[in-house]
Image (cartoon, rainbow over all chains, first blue to last red; front, side, top):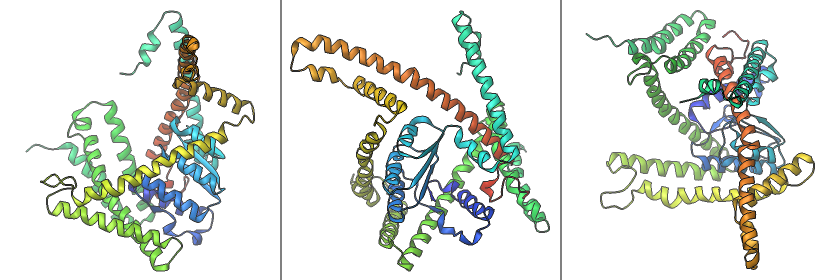
Length: 162
Length: 268
């Protein structure tokens, strides 16, 4: 697991370690599995792409916040024949992932994945709360559209940002 | 003597409480496991409160949230050092074992040491990492301009080839969705460039028709980008923002604690 941000690197290491522990195979975990690469965008891309080509992994998870490097990484993964799962909250690079990856976690699905996989009741509850809040947002949005169409802009004014 | 409330509170949350927790944790491992959760709670909740409560001791120039931001920069500096140490450790191990690709690791370590030493030389000699007093580049700047930037541009330029192969795969009309994608992409591409004018260039009689056709394609492109595409993007952004807020609340409240090496339900 390659890391770009040194701040999250230690947390990533602990997350992977706990995943091995949870599956009952702590003996398979080695610290060098999770390593820091660099903060620089294309140096990181070059390092990870090269690693994909050298190690030819069976599965690649491209999860996080990507920019122009998204397609380079996803296409390299595709060329080595790996199953690819991508996930990004921001929609800018999603089309590239949808075009090149086998599965793509779009937007909020990225944050719901841990609850979906663990089936923890508290995590699932927060997803449920999120859905209810989203439904409320949609209703308020629709009410705003109807009100604005009838010449009343008070909902639009309430929702207006600075 | 003026009492600096923000400093006292920050020291209490991020120094006194962790130290007491570590001390008490000598006899109670369960308590020791909770200390990072408490620190994460304060680190997460203070900027949120500062956003909604415009008080000087929270969001002012020397407020708690502002100071936390400054602390984050300091922590990031040390974390970067940790990252560099990790790179050197991993690469050295690879070189010592002669693992596959060890030569690349050797190049990496050599580059790191040379560039790093140029940076340290710049700091020691007070020339910095930009230009010398005579206008010539410092060794660090020379490495950046002559080696690093061209390498970056090389990787970036590969994107054009990857984009072509991805587009070829994505634009095959295998099913209804892919066909819609193909048609929409065709319209947007044609609307972004003066394609019709280019095609009508050899026949002057067709120029007015080509110009009005281009205008139509341009407005169709704008409609595709702003209406269906904009609506879908807004939906994704709203959903993602709610998801991020929900995730942040889970982390702040200690429900999501995988980053500490603890499962969601584990009592640390």
